[in-house]
Image (cartoon, rainbow, N blue to C red; front, side):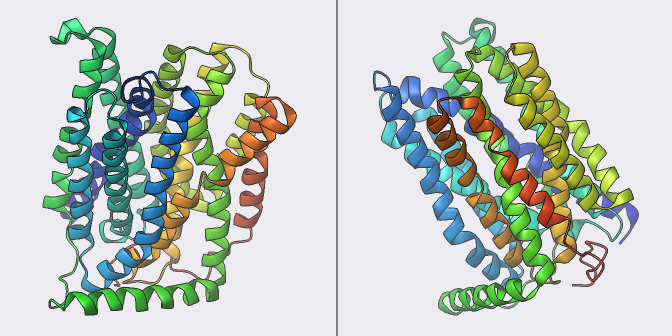
Length: 426
């Protein structure tokens, strides 16, 4: 493979993150939760609307947890990772665009479309991650993984900034009110996601698949492979140890992502403060993820992850005592420094450890744990906050996840695993 072709494949793969991160940033974290409460559940008690949103998120996560490993095994058996990626991506794109059509008060339709969009987004990420060994060489798997996350932060941040500007000044863009702007934003996210999926479609290659098989045989093969993978993961001590460590510390990371806005509101910060903090995290995450990729290539991904987790320990301690909006902004900056690095290097470290030729299957497990993440953390934060009567103690409880995850990660031995993420040996 020529250097130019390798570079095109790497950037084509990474630009998918630039596109689909608009969904996680603007729809999942930004506009949908607020719009769901204030427009599609207008006039309803806030606790009831929160319950409905929580059920929608849980349902989507549960379906992905059940589907991802089997789908990954099927994709590996046929070498159809890219095709599966685009099937799920187009589902997510269409459902996101469909949110524009949902009228006020129709919360059930909004919830169904959101669940399907989440399935499309999360399902496509299973196969996106599994393509990493095909676009990275032995010496650049950490930097390639970090490139994807960094472009994701940049893409999500740029489009979020544009949509926030639209919502603040709708008349500048020819819209009558903010409600129309938010609805149109769902269309813009879908278009953005579609356009920046095209480089991966055109530039990324994988080995040719096997001859077409009957659907029942393909499905049976998927279940056989996933059963075998369950036994292999348990036998591969370091892979198993890493996955348990990852499950713990990524739960803490995802809890910060999902609970930061709620925590800020509990401390009395305004909506504008929270949106500004989200923008700070996005634009900080762009260069920070690249820096962590370089750090991982120089000193190893485990060192980089442990450094990121040490930042999260400091952030957790700080968050439990902060009082001002300025401190919240600095906190967002610190999270942006560590978040993308921990995510990117975890992915590249795992890519080094898994058996060649079965990337989608093993990344199905990896993403399944990612979906299970943010289950323990939010419950723990909420329960400790209720018991103590203080949300600060709730956020402080996340130290358990970061410290236990770091302790297990330190016991992972990478010396017996291949040092690169290239697919050339597949």
